Amino acid sequence: MTDISSEHNLHTITNGVKAKTDISHIHAFLGAKTGDKWLAAAKDNLPLLMQDHANCEKKAAGTAMNLIFRYEFHRDLQEKLAQLVREEMLHYEQVLELMRERGIAWSHLPAGRYAKGLLKYKRTWEPAGMIDVLIIGAFIEARSCERFSALADVIDDEKLSKYYKYLLKSESRHYEDYLALAQSVSDEPIDERVAFFRAVEAQLIDSPDGELRFHSGVPDFA
Image 1: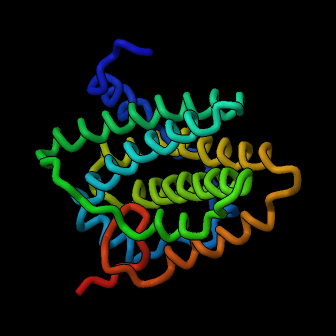
Image 2: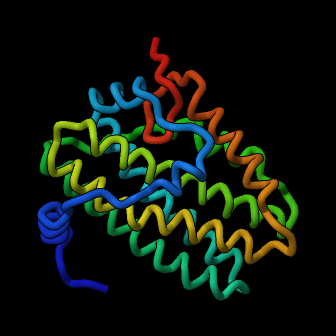
C-alpha cells in the first residue's frame, strides 16, 4: 500500500522513463504484429483509446479478482494475482488522471469483440477451463504490452508516450505470470493449447474490425 497520490506517481514515472523495455519475447510469443492501419487510427483517436485503456485496466483487475475467489486452493495463483490486481487498479487510477489532465470526460464505451472472441473457445470442464482462462490472460497482457510499445513510438503526446513505456515492464511480467500459472495447473505441456489461442488471437488482430479498441483488429469503419 502507498500513500503517494497517483498524480505524484505519474510525475515521477514520466520524468524517470528513459528507454523502452525490451519486449522481443512478446513479439515471439504473439502470432501477429499490430499494423500501421490500427496505429494510424489509434493516433487519431487517443481520447477514445484512453477510455478503453481505462476500461481494460479495470476489467483486468476484476478478472484477476474473480480467479482469486474461484481458485482459492491455488496458493501461487493467489499471490501472483493479488499483486496483479493492485497494479491494474493503480494503472486504472493513473489513466483516469491522464484523462483528467487532457480534459477527456468519462463516457460509456461498450467492449469490443476481442475478449469474447477468445473466451468463446474456453473449455467448460476443470482444470481445462482454468488453464484456458490463464492462457487467454497471457495473450491479453502480451497484446497490451505490444501495443503500448508500438503506440509509444508514434503518438505526439510525450507524457503519454513515456507512460506507455513505463507500463511495458509490468504488462510483460503479467503475461509471464499467467502463462506460468497455466502450466502449473496442467499435468502435461500446454504448448498445443497456447498455439491454438495464438492462432485465434492473431486472427482477431489481423481481420477487419468495425470498432476501434485497444485490442481491436484492422480498422474497417463505415
